[in-house]
Figure 1 (cartoon, rainbow, N blue to C red):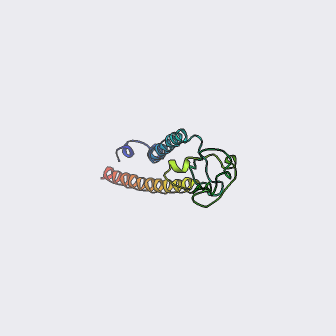
Figure 2: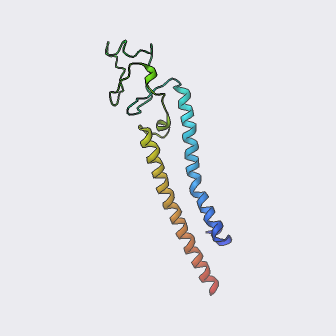
Figure 3: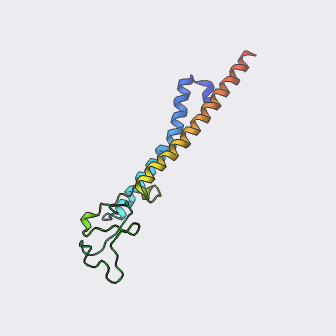
Length: 144
């Protein structure tokens, strides 16, 4: 309210916009840091070529058919059952979803963005409404 009373409306709108975007920028910074940390913890991790489940950690040889099905060893995706015979056929793990606290990378990115945009838009609209009301009250006081 104090800012709205002392600056032009355009400056106030820019101020409100920056207040809305700051939490998003901080969240992005946290996700990037977490993604880097996970990449360092699991440098050779792979993910499923079908559903992107990961990290999948293979130990031993790169030919995944050698011991698959022996003694309880299952080299297929633990979520969807996808299997590729060689480790090179499994994409390198993208820790974005894990950094966002989700399981599916695409779902993680899009739902996180939608949640943030919806919440930010609601906060911005509420601040605009409050600023307009405050300006009206201030103008009414000045007319008295």
